[in-house]
Amino acid sequence: MKSIASAPGKIILFGEHFVVHGTKAILAAINKRVTVTSTFTDNNTIKVNSELGTLEVPISSSYEEAKSEFRPFVYLANKMIASNQNVNGLEITIDSDIPVGVGLGSSSACCVAAAGSIFGLIKEWSSEEILKISIESEKTIFPDTSGADCTVCTYGGMIEYPSIEKIGNTFGLNLLIANSMIPHNTKNSVEKVNKFKENNEERFSQLCDLETKLIDEVITAMKNNDTTTFGLKMSENQKYLEEIQVSNDTLRDMISYLKEISLGTKITGAGDGGCIIALVKDENMDKVPALLPNDEECFSAKIDTKGVVWSKI
Ligand code: PMV
Image (cartoon, protein in one colour):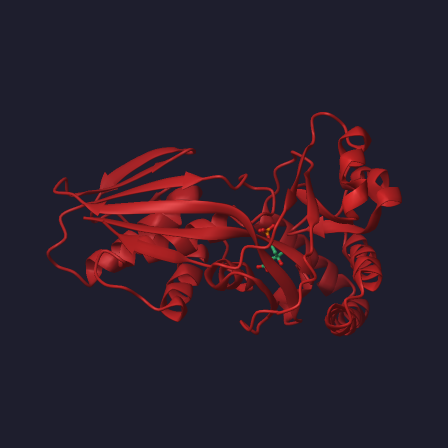
């Protein structure tokens, strides 16, 4: 028997970093997915196959002994095995079309799909249960996670986190994603922002209030089909991200190259590398490749309305 689960990647439209400190955020699942397939084996091992390599460890191994990228899988396998005495081994295979380490939710989508797939070997689980264990597994890599990424990867669509209610009117939003090809480390960026907060407590609290207000204005703009305001708010949010120092020259250059043809542009995710998103009018889409350096990958993303999907064969 194979238990197969897939989950979408994501973009953060508004509120990254501030969400770790309790503000709301707007996120959307995108049409790039990861699929995890799990099977029982008799090998007394947990085996993980992924594009990052293969790991095979004895069934009793702790996740802490594994390399960071494999920890969530070993954690989930251990947890499932602990509640099922008859399991003699597990093989977990990951197939992904989400670029790794660039803020598009590869790690969260893996945690969600792996939770659905590994626990799906026993029975079908609700989205709420999958989300809970996927966040636990993500914490093995990044203990301070806000949980926003796993939430949107589980439920799909566009959400105003912490609500899981899907935002209905997304006015056919077509966003351009451009990848700086600089891998980032979410944990390090979040720690850097923690330091900024410690050294600038009052200003950081003001920025959190500004972010909350901005998100309320975005929600109103969406209700009014007002893409111009939506774009302006993206650029305003970028100023807050610049202020907390998660941008760099490459990202600033990319944002400025796209300025003329977009309604708004900003970092998506932790920053310090990774991707930017731009709201580009349809008629300007074909001008994009000429504006960005050749080595920077770009593509347009559609919102994925399906979150985690599970099946058994
Ligand atoms: O770059 P990503 O996909 O790891 O996104 C990180 C988003 C943060 O707000 C910086 C952290 C979080 O847990 O929400």
